[in-house]
Length: 430
Image 1 (cartoon, rainbow, N blue to C red):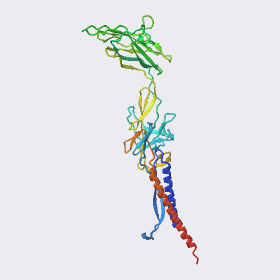
Image 2: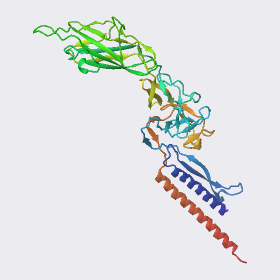
Image 3: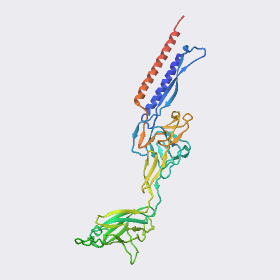
Image 4: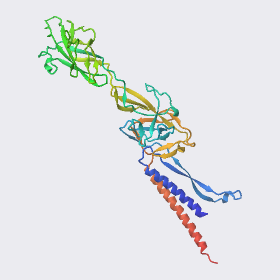
């Protein structure tokens, strides 16, 4: 019997050393959770044996219990690197069309060729749906969806109206050279540029040049300054000159007229230019509103500059806030909330089945998954730009490994002693 008792001790020690070796091998695995081997003694009892005379029959491995303690957090520059500080797991799907959901603590996510957010193993990160303001719509296992980053945002709209409110310096002199030549900076006083868009969403540059037509009126002692002035504004879109009324009687500029106090007297409405031909071959008419312009003794300044065109925005970046709401920003200024990162917890996380690659699957022992979001339902906080490392402590594991080795040696010695006793008995001669 002592042979089998010692053998059970050897097998138990081997199991413990295998568990410790597995922990040490994954000391650098993101999101890894160490395990601990639990043992139980084996007692062969009988109703006819007195309790004081019972002899144990060895040891058995009760189980390898996973330890879900917090691992160290490592800072990262990737906004899609996520870490849970506290309880909870990320929900991922190995197949986007399947109902199967796995769970992980490894929050190192990336974007695949189809703009899906996945982990390093190709599992799809799951999020809850949100409305346009980023408010959670529903947090349940049935509402999970794959997180996909849209490549573009918005609808193309050709520019129709441009508004420029500038302040012109009342003391500015007439340009040294006439007539106006946009390639000669001495023929105009100031210039502004505005980005406008054609019907295909292509950007174009609208440049407006400001030319003073009349010299400032000299100011006499004790008299108020006379700010009466006329300015010509020439506009170009790319290389195309903007005109009003093509042909005889037409004009290639907009006249700004100011009275003696510098107040704008004309134009009082926006000016609509003749249509231009864009690079895409379509005709486009653009209006210029200069009615917010002023003339004072202050330096030239652009106080207002708007245009109503829109281009399709290209994806520029993604952020994840503390609540787990994922927002994508685009080149046209759009910011869209795409979903809220789903966190899931279990009544008994130690009952989860390990599937490798820092992943787990639910079982009947773990209990049903409880869906929630960061900071709610007992779930931990979510941090973007952080990675949770393994929770293995090398020093602790090495000490445990030494103890397991000593246990193995002790059981080996007991087995050797039992063998010597048996040999002694075999050598007894009558």
